[in-house]
Length: 454
Image (cartoon, rainbow, N blue to C red; front, side, top):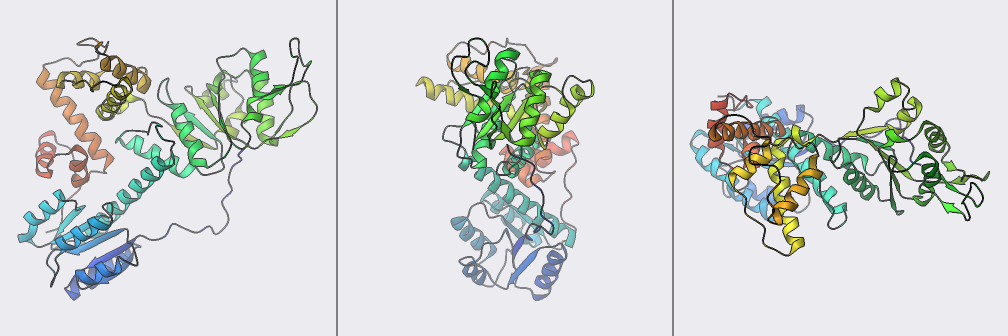
């Protein structure tokens, strides 16, 4: 069984962010480098784009900050060169007042953001910090996808809660710790468990068991195994799920349904990392990671005596929460499009076309069955059977235009929350021009990150 990983004294801290700073003005270059250094970043300064491009062959920074106007190759030339080498490397352009139009076009071409002169030290360091955070998030997501088996469902969603869940999984996945996953029915608890198993690098199997699906007498044998003659009908030895998951991962769904006597025996296995099959006195060493899942509040159940408190604390070394779909309506279009395309591919038919009214209805539906229910609706829709939700089910009261406007506000606020109110990133997520997003933000009164200091 995987135990808690102790932190070694004096463990190394995360390395400082590395910044390439390209600026031909000596005073501005030195001042910007000092501001970034004081913000805890490693800065390598260049007076021209050519030297910075040459250095990219030997060193890859986390972010590049470059003036647009440089002696020979411009900051725009540098941006295009960086995109050929690494499209995920963020480039921040520094512009004069007359270069703003050029910088806006550069953002459309792939630049992360621009800062207009004169700017404050805080504005510079904050913009760089957010660019680094986005790069790290994309790297974590890519590593997560690369380590998942082919065809495994990624954890789709742009909402802050889903981004945070993916970050936690990328960190926890390789760690030798047991995990408690909390989520409503249909939220994807087994998907999370399978992802964690793949990220762990364990060579053994992924073994799943629903604790609510079997009566206590059979559940105990299923988990621990038994010897011949252990009980009536036990004619031969049976290897239990724990033993079968050796060197792999044991996933116990609906752990809250495990009877108290079985909980006590399972706790002992977690503590001693060995089992005794029913009817045996011989201990068998086991090494498997346990991922338990529940839709209940185990802490409350432990407080009332319905669940063993010591088992709860043993399981909850790390707790992951899957947000219900109704709390992240901005993720519905992405999920629906994915499942409709997946269903059409499996059926060998063209993906059906949905209307704006269809998508509005889906986004306003409450989704009590979460992603599982959404997937079933997508399947029905791909088969040409409609979605089964009813034309008005789950829809808010009011005219169509009012409901469309309400949904638009929801999507904008989701995007702004996901990017910590960074308008450039939010516009990229929503796939609209930044000026359009500024106008919409002003109309709905949504706060945004301050612009450059004038």
